[in-house]
Image (cartoon, rainbow, N blue to C red):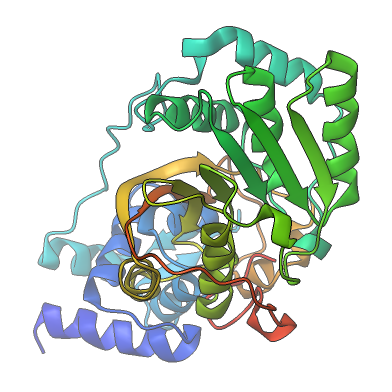
Length: 358
């Protein structure tokens, strides 16, 4: 059997274990990652795979004798594994990420005053909790989001709504920039809402408001069609993604208005990304103008060991640094885009065969 066919065979076996569709390139990426690190979570990061998929591949490599777990709970290649890598000419993945901007194209420190203010005001921010599928990005990520939005002409003088994503405090950071015409923040977590409103009142930010809302319910009629920009962080099942983005679209004023959101390859496969993009460009009628891979860096949440991801991991060792990242999407509404403001069911949300981190 040729090496290429062996990789296909490994992908098929890993698919059976992980329940996520795979191909030989995914095996190559995991093997490439194993030339750099033995930490499972870092391998997930290098391979850009949903956790169940990466776990399926690693477990297959272990069973087939290409890898083993050492005394430190790191995953290591066996001689058989090194022979496979040599035969197929697999190399360590190279990292050329800019150290200044962390690969985003926009360094957070270009507005150092906003960064300092954001750090000062968020020292006692609410912690991410599992009940609401929360996970907080780094402060550098949040500030870079604001600068990116500004660089695309979507901040100054604009009416902006942040919906169901304030665990990252992006709405607060936008308000602290004092560049938007108005900032509206809606979230199910009363802790985040109270946190934001206290800061708005204390700092005299009159054009920002935050209120509690369960996004499974239709939005208030008076909000529809009133915003230039929406920002959200949709759950990554197909039904929930479609519903959340359509919810955001319903808030936009007209064509040319935009939306921002994150999508991961940690809770979604590349196959699902294709379905997401079909929904965006076909069903909803928007253009995807920007996809910046690994823009959003997430701090490992306190409830990590209570997640399906931790349960699936082949070894029970903590992450070493940032491993959960998402791409930053910008979409623009075109003439004829569709609106939707219906009910989102509980069955649509959060976990399926690819998702695991809630």
